[in-house]
Image 1 (spheres, rainbow over the protein chains, first blue to last red):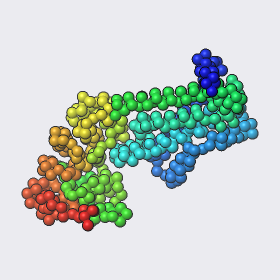
Image 2: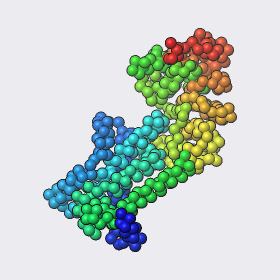
Image 3: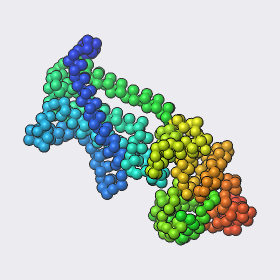
Image 4: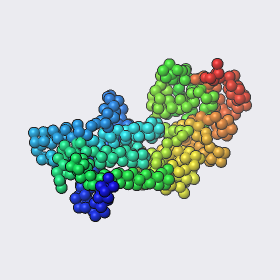
Length: 231
Length: 239
């Protein structure tokens, strides 16, 4: 065990190119999926928070349920959509980083939207009377509330990043875990562990945890500073 | 928009009567202060006038119209301040109005100067003190140039100096031609500000008199009891 850990640290210390490539691809895929998730999920959640229409409650329940969507199910659905006979088959995205981004985005959007909906709805409950009297329209309220809740919404975004980076089932199915092309940290850990190469698995695991922990620490301090600065 | 005529107004959510057969006529000038014990429906009346609650019975007629022709603004006991600068908190409220950005900025600067907050224009509104927050809320309402300004206990948790500053602003807004309708529990404040007093109890207007006459000789038994600090109103936990 100690020997394996030392090997893992040695891999990290030597900046092993195989390891760095995997980390770089993981970051590219997950951060792109997070950007898409935030672009779609934040306004969707905020809109759902202020909107008033028939079926809204059902939509909220569905969105909350989608937060727990099993990643392998998403993987299969995206696989079917992107496979040659699927509706998006002509784009030839299957077994590519783009397919992994699509799968992770599908997982991240409902999570960010659901958390955003709850945060913005709480604010809307307090603000709605004054905003209505001022004459602010609902689309304007969406923009105002997203800006006003930005520090709380950083938590929603972090949750999305955590979901994307720790996900393995969907990217394994739609990416194919191709060495040097679609192999990311989670799929590499799964594969190397099954092969018995625990050193690489542990090294990747350490990087993965350090990245997630580092991002959380950074957001925590930025949020604390911003709250002191802006109230 | 005035006179504002309220007839047989009823508000009874889920059968719980808050206002019942409320009658009131308001002229378009001066400061009208609503007094009354807790639960008498003061805040509910303001919210009904603002259109924030549904009317369950009766009518509200603004001049000859069902809807107010002039602008209406309201300042709440706990005003909503967005997490942005003091300046932006006023300026955003002018966006729905047909003003150019330059006009919005000029009007915002003007009202902030008049409420004594120009020097904090760039600060975050969330970092203001209680008195400054209330002055900012008043500045925002003032900038909208309302014909009717509704104030729900605007000095409820303020110290005397902050209260004095808020009262000075309310007088200035009145002087500029806005009708002010406000609630308060502070009898001293009502004496200082009110042109007329509306005394509300048990969901009805018990008395509506010029302020001097009300304070000198309250006519209704309920108002007399209230002025003497008696508690004839049943309290929920009092069996």
